[in-house]
Picture (cartoon, helix red, strand yellow):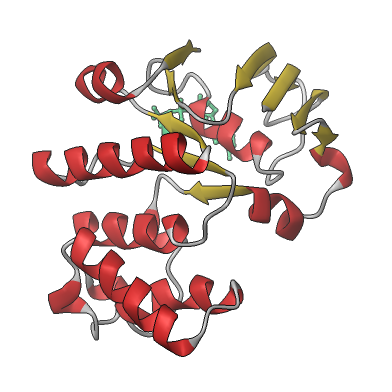
Length: 210
Ligand SMILES: Nc1ncnc2c1ncn2[C@@H]1O[C@H](COP(=O)(O)OP(=O)(O)OP(=O)(O)O)[C@@H](O)[C@H]1O
Ligand SMILES: [Mg+2]
């Protein structure tokens, strides 16, 4: 379980807090939506939950452990985070390499890395682009690649900031099904920041409204 406990966060000194005494719980084994109008602080919350920003007060616990005592690498192994802007996420020279990178860090054999990479390339319709430079892809393709790269890591929690924006209906459904399977079969705790009522109704067990 991830527990957000009375978080308060302000960007600039003397400004009003963007997030004020927010508490919420995110369970493993289900998809939880985080919704709220533009600018209400959803992305800020995701950065607080992944240790990129530090709260003024309050805490975030992952499976009972306060993240203020963990470094970014340790938090990243527990929560796979997909940024709202995929350009910030992609750094490898090819699409295939972007997916293989995390698999290599997981200690898989070359054969396993190759077959898992192909599976994710197929799933996210990127097979034809496997040798392309990630930053030359379209926005939708970049989003799919960022998803594939993070999903393949197998962290116990996943946090996705508006992942469906650049996806067509088919990819959206594939993503929903994949996330549902991760939650149900691998007991993954999935948190999806989203405005999309259809996606939320269909795939999310709970909803946190900010
Ligand atoms: N780096 C920053 N410095 C100062 N203010 C910021 C910064 N980033 C965001 N803000 C402000 O904090 C508030 C919350 O922003 P945030 O991006 O968390 O909202 P959001 O709910 O994710 O919005 P959206 O739905 O547009 O993605 C907004 O008023 C925004 O202008
Ligand atoms: Mg946002």
